[in-house]
Length: 387
Image (cartoon, rainbow, N blue to C red; front, side, top):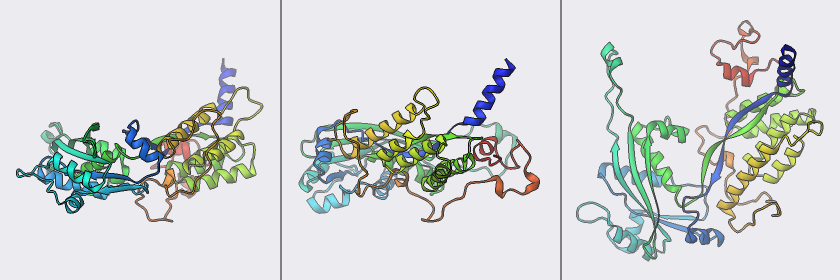
């Protein structure tokens, strides 16, 4: 039994294991099954969406309307948006009734006259965005007292056909500060909790009518004793930070020097997916399937690449045939941004963050098989350069 355990441990160290890295992939709009939306995508016609004034408390709806303008997606070139003030100017119809609440009938009429295809209407159902009182001193009773709930808001979004007035879809979004930061990490340090919740709710509203990006995890190989493992692990560290271009350089360096390093080729295929070159991803993945190991060692990666490509084609090329016999998609030169660049970046271009490395640690803090001070076991395992 001990002998088999030693063999298994040696095989794990030789072949390595797996880790994950964040990647943003395209996701279909929630109205993907709508015939009107499919026709607009297939004909490559401009998708005109009219935004009706949001109903609810005026002090909240004004901020939601402003956030809708600020969070308009910039990765969809054929998207035309008409905001409430533009609708009023173009149609001459007042969109707010005498009681200060928006009028849906007026919004429909203004959108139809302006040539819009859809009307996006929102209604704030409930909210708890009041500022929280911060205790001046930490006392025993304040520690035992139950913490107040996080700032939250519930808003119902409805999409109508601007020409017929029929309801096409509806979605109620419940958002709080924790979920907002989890879904959109770039909002973590942008303003107050109220601003974060409203901005996240506004971003979610666009998911009903246009393709958006969804955060997922790409599986990377993590080798240890194979030749070139150090370069592969350095690339993995860059990938965990979302810097797929830097990661690709490290993996390509390992693959050029050690062509038999299957981990480098597998991770290179993930880097090709990050820049939407799915054919290149499949070509690289062929090098990651060694002939001396029985079975298909790349089946899961290949299935994941097919899934991401199907989602991409459903968003931007709905007329493309699907199935094994369909022709492979070649990289396009359209104005859509790559997956890895589709999310807003807080750092200016060119200011890449260097991952932590044991090479930068003082020599007296390096103890074999023990993380240095300030390092977690996860950071040490994924970014170690001992081998």
